[in-house]
Image (cartoon, rainbow, N blue to C red; front, side):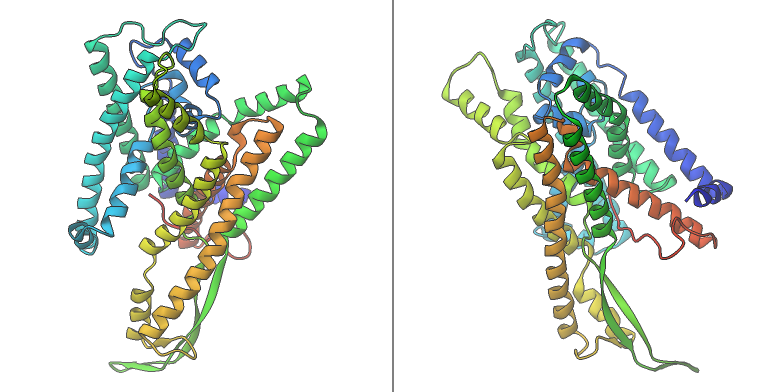
Length: 445
């Protein structure tokens, strides 16, 4: 692996891409520490600490710690992800969007433009809700979060947070275009990794204080190591479907028949399904938190408090919905990225067929059935990986940071990045990260 990194640095183009990606990540981390005007940073951090493991703590995870400091990047990239989910869902039901999707590159550019517009709108709504929430919350001990409440503060905060998310979106697009690809995923990855040393220190402090013993810590680390291995296996596993190509004549050339395989990945979504599911689940709890007033005892406030409680990470209702949404988005993402009918038609066009099946419709149905079965197994494995660490962390009071969502995002994005680098190495006849075989990746945002 060390030799692969040395080869990567020796390739000028790949070296530029890696350095550009690191520079963009550095800019993102700098922006995460630039405070929003008019906010009591100590009181805001106290509020997030009191909500660790709740909705606000979960939002702080995806913002890379920017929410706890209420920096210009406090909203993070979640508005963009939420808008992408909405647009992809609408693509399947709105004829106009479906037509744009079929138009190729120009259609995708148009959908991307609509996604940006939707992100701006959602940012404004979330920023307004967060502004009013901060004015109604009193964390105690550090004074009020909002220093001077007024129209000037409201406009400044909404504008700052919206522009911050738009800038993160631009950084992600630049990384995807000029860096090592998958820019949005890398930004989320960078935010999580940046907090890893602090969380490890907190875990060590719990061990020294006697809150957890050596056996508990060893067991937890062993389970996490096993789940990391399972994550790698699931995201690199695929089902080989045998395909036979008949002899054909093109002009004066005769192409002999050959046997090959159609690789069907066990899990096409990977970290995407987890991020989508998390984004959908934190939305209702976030809205409830925005409009919740602790000083009110009315029926409406009781419903909002109940919604915020039951839809918070760690609650049984949240866990059940989380598992269901992961399975749903695994199938959904597979459906929008892999079309069995198109694959069957392309095989038929070039004289390919699956032994024992007629080309065309029968082949498409077989591929669809096979993909549905293996996706079910892959999605259930992702559910186990996502939920088991959360349950263990809660039972041992180790901390919500070391949950399954964090694990899947970190491992998934790391594999994608290694795959991107390896593709550049193999294209230039260098060895990849592994002596035998190669990393098999997937597309992301």
